[in-house]
Length: 365
Image 1 (cartoon, one colour):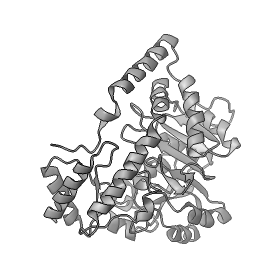
Image 2 (cartoon, rainbow, N blue to C red):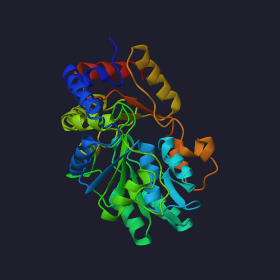
Image 3 (cartoon, helix red, strand yellow):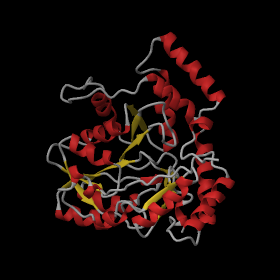
Image 4 (cartoon, rainbow, N blue to C red):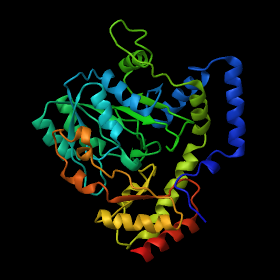
């Protein structure tokens, strides 16, 4: 029997489908297709859940990054620090606003942005902003990053695309800092739409009208050049409905992470530090190998048994052709890339599935 990497069938069960169809019918009847009551409900409720003062929906997670850069007045030629390990969209957003990415190295055990590298790069380059990424759903060390950036006036934009349900510290969700914090609600995320959607969280009242203007063609401002990045009403309706159950589903992910930690301890690969059990959103469950060859061997063994698994970050940002000429530090990131494999950790994984995965990895390695 196969074990899927994602399980949309159980996530979108019959009762959920019924409620979604009712909402879509109401939207059709009302003729409110772009921005409507579900947009406003979600923005209010999501801000409260994530410990933010304001939530502003946008069309997708990449737009959220670009709009956040524009809201902080990042201009062509400005230097923005990005981690050497992240999805390409982080660097793409910097390039799309005309700014210059500066590579920041990562912690070799997690792939998260290294505060010491930020310090070195802020001294070597006139950084205007940094974009720490909570990869896998692991929270970056925001206190350490703020300690480096705040005295120098360096803005922080948190890329929390994988981090809905994560905490920067116990009781303090990602989204509750003084940064601009961006989320993606792509269908594979912990909190997911039926297509593209994203948002920006902020504590700063002065950012609200600015972001609203940028996402809607500059309307409401005589000086801002905007874009079309409104979140359509159907996606907001889906997100607002899913918001009611996301905490329970995230607790299931955490439960599976604990079980994996118990089952996989002692096998020939590295697990994340147990401190992340309570802090991570467990969007992904990564295991880290000493070599790419070992990762490929484990991946093949699982694939042969119809178990969904996937390597993320097969290339560092330095190894991406478009970013290969970027200045900065990338030694740890280059060594990290290609050696991580992600195991199924959606809310509907069963303990017997996890035991089967453990046994296959043990036999293969």
